[in-house]
Length: 93
Image 1 (cartoon, rainbow, N blue to C red):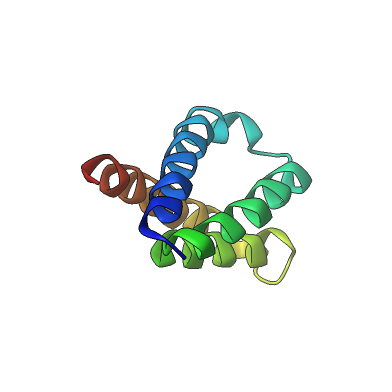
Image 2: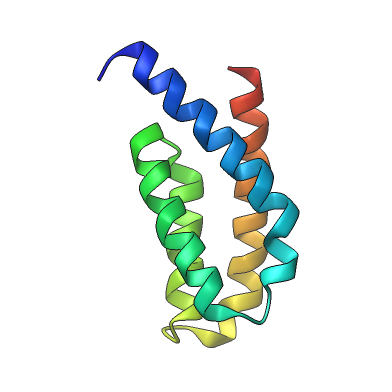
């Protein structure tokens, strides 16, 4: 719970998001791999307080699991916006 620990976690998240942004489009069509990445990302977001990205990842996960297959494209767009915004916010810290 220290400020140093949070800062370190946010640094790790920033690096993860940079890599994810680079590879995300390559994952399209592989719902299982996307879902796995989103699961890990949601946990990291929870530790770092990245609530908007966590919420977008949850919505996309639900859509990929078939809860709302017609919403995959829409939720993917929302996820990519939240990903970009979170990356920008982490760079400012």
